[in-house]
Length: 424
Image (cartoon, rainbow, N blue to C red; front, side, top):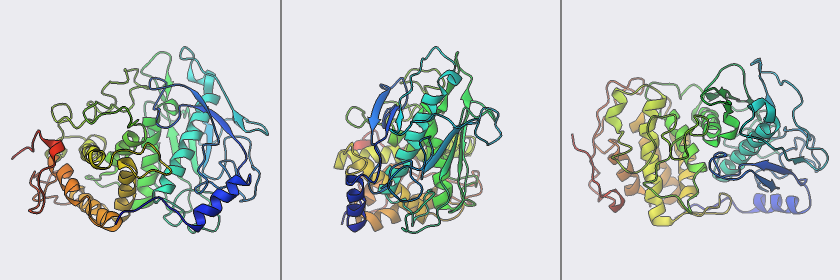
């Protein structure tokens, strides 16, 4: 049995509303999915990027009636504004797209980010809304507790669009997303980065923005009080989401190094990024395993172990299913990985450590795909020290776990990982 994209009456109704003009035409000049930054592709004008089921009245609606309530970067899923003084209040009304909802703003790499803040805000609004719609299509909808002002009568509490603060003066060289329960808006803060001259902003580096989104999603799905323990996979999920959503699977390869945050650090697109090493299935380059969590700093560096296992698994599924390169109608490896991730977070125990989180993936695969990926999941985790004999200890400690690289008896080694497994 295989799960497919959401279909049926709700999807048909949403498509009909869109075709009838329920969602007004809107255009945004952005670095579109999966383009991670100015170093990865062109600044492009996209029109009507919203998904008809996830956002049936477009991205500027809040009342569920045809016609936008806002011509600024505000709507049902997100509210984006500059907060240069760091007081959690918008500096101004932000860019206005007018009646045609045209958000077309230029930028220059030689200018300070404040000189092209409208372009930054537009890119952030586009990405957060795209993330909303993509995650919606893969299981993070109203009933699952997603973030929307108006839930259109489809379950959940509503009144909780994501608040996105760009050029946030409350910090520098970072980003964060707050943990909130359904009905309370999470806040994403994108700080300026001071590494380069002129400075850069995380609004133009989708790997940074998606990580911040991932924080909010982790807290919402797994529980806001359940994802701050010492051995939490939360940061690893954030990195994984950033990798998954900014990869062009038509050109990428499994062993290609992928650094996160290379743009804000002024590195080349092939740089190591903010984690000190780039993600790849090549164990010589990305060598972290479960035993390293005892020595790495938590949660960001320990999270690289978790993200590495999920990235290995992604390419194992690409080897079998290929990639769709279509987030809304596809059923390739990347679609399956996102569905599995959302379901695994829903099944994860509170304060889960890595072994418990691994088991949630096995449960998710049973529920979504009748266990079709059982041994591929075991191979990817065993390769990173989360094999059948791995011992977690307490999820509140990184000092009592023991790595193991063995497979359960029913599984054979995945040919993709021919470089073998480590042994203790």
